Length: 257
Image (tube, rainbow, N blue to C red; front, side, top):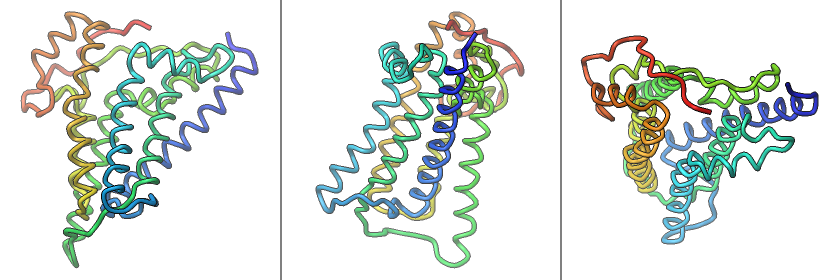
């Protein structure tokens, strides 16, 4: 189905995707943990606030825009040899990773440090922050790690098959809350130990995105899954987990390509 040239492009795309993904997540973990102070942005004072606000906004705006139909068409143009649609998940994960690299690498620290734990207090705060990131990994796994990490696209092409999205199965964290990835992601913003003004700026802005962004995602799910997703939405809360789990393994159905 794919020739040697296409498979080579897919393999290279996969390498770039996962290298970028690892670097972006590492920079985010370190940036939040140390109160955004590792950033190497050149600005100070009001200019730093403005520049940091732009960095925070570019992530949320582009991250959502690329999931739209127009955004999908734009992503498809980035990959040659007719692989745009098949490598869409890989390209999307790569662009998102570069956005994180840009945000945390070009961030201009505002300071000062408002508060940070000392002595024995470092351990429990670090444990809470670590737990938040482990929850992110768990929720991504529940959602489908091949899609979330970008592996589905390039991995399928290299093996000579078109990417096939698995049915949305209500499992794990999705049995208790409809948007567990966004919830877990927001927890990482608030559990890191060092507090600075710019850390607060990022935590507020990205938490608002985590609350509002999934609304557009759920509209797409309604188009793809119809009444079955409506039934799931009626039973499971949007953002605050319920103690009453949805039926395990209850498949909503496969999306349209």
